[in-house]
Length: 271
Image 1 (cartoon, one colour):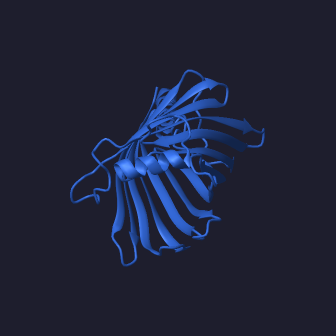
Image 2 (cartoon, rainbow, N blue to C red; image 1 turned 135 degrees about the horizontal axis):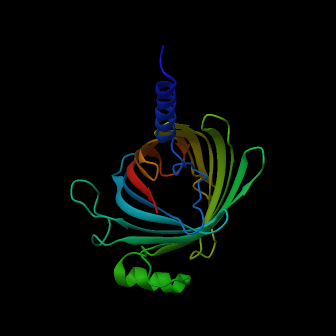
């Protein structure tokens, strides 16, 4: 018969293993926000390709750093900086050089109920290759186009609301609706995105899958349905490495897109 000390040692070891195997805090959750004075760093490298029928492909190779910093209970500030590279044989070199930066600054807040429902609201300001943090008149844009051949500088406001339901065993179905608008253009055209997905935490792995519908009400009637998925591995309780991918299933827009997809690898660390 096994001695009591052996039984207790086995139970303690089992508890320790199970505690280590299940991540203490799921930093990969789509509704995760940092606690006060904590910071989550996400470094990602992505490749995006969109091919237009009877035309060349639009390609982007993007390195990005995103920080989520807790400033109050269930409230985090978001700050991000990215660079789109001109890389021979990998992108179509549609930028002027290798320094093509974009920035984003925003805030997110969670509201939780006792039965596991989470609602998250967020808003941010995004700008690409800026020369100013303020808007630009159509006349100024035409002058820049005449002098430089493009108006690559771009700015928009973004807003999003998410809702998720935490079920036992690390399972969470969720949905999201986002809206963004270019604040430079006089018509202030709006773009929308709706997502329904499911997130699962399984010991030292997390998985995510969903369908995303991107659309607007412009004359081009842009409508695109994407399938997307992600997997992340917990190197430690506060460090993960993973991958993300999406693929355009169907769409209706002009000019016609024959296919579009994104692949991404990413590394997270919680401080």
